[in-house]
Length: 387
Picture 1: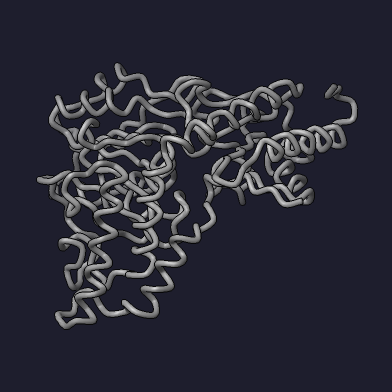
Picture 2: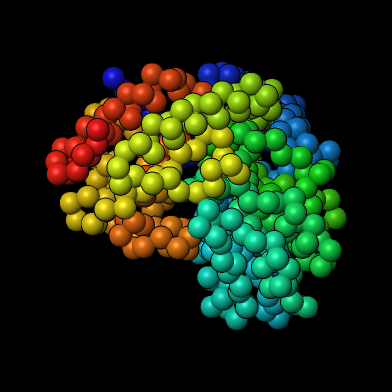
């Protein structure tokens, strides 16, 4: 029995996206910058995908969608693209629970002399809007707050935070990689200037993402070259995977109203069973949470014989795929910086696990996984009653 429960790491590419990619690879393989028929057919494919991705977040102007190689590049283009507008270092604000694509990029800016404020979060992983308001300075040029935290699932009050930033006159960016396609996102309602997306989180192909750029906002590109993507992302567009991204985005938007409630029901079913296991405690916000996301941690993790990674390995042997915290940290045996920022002890922060659900997840998958996890913990900690 194989049960995949790591949809926040990546999702399987849906058949509709694969079908359009096959068509493009065999029939529309031209360079979209070329003026002849082959190139213009490819350009049409790219622009159709731009419309489809724009529709997922209600971006009225499709030209506000800049295709990138993924969410990491979109985040880097947002942060560095703004920073490069200034000859003298300024001030930037992020949260203490950002994805490494933000936190590491900002760390580089710090080396270059930029001032950085990292907003603390509460035990649920949420930013207090009053803390953001107090942190803003006269030279604050950019604020970046993650929409839905990838490790613990907490959804930030993006609309409220955006209004605070806009009233101050700074730019506001959000990493919406985990939220897009799972929660309704309307950039016409949110006070966001930049928003990052990733194809492979919504059943599209890996290797492509996008940055939404509010019309009128300027960036300095990271790459010099032919000036593709409105001059902001040079390099010949990867037409097949962009096409797959477009189809996945369009279908995600269509299915949102039915799939999100289904995922919430499965998520709550999992939580109800997991919190009954002694030593396992839920992490993140129980209410303002990504609909597909379950995160727990072991209070008695020791980092040697028992940790989140231990559980990942043991469940993998049982044919079940989960994650130890954020996927990009899974190879490191060190406390989760996200859980530490939320106030958890180093021991507990070694024991974080993440179970994320998707289109193929069933109630039986949830029940079987909980049973398997109980058996693993009973075998590893025979002195602990799991009845």
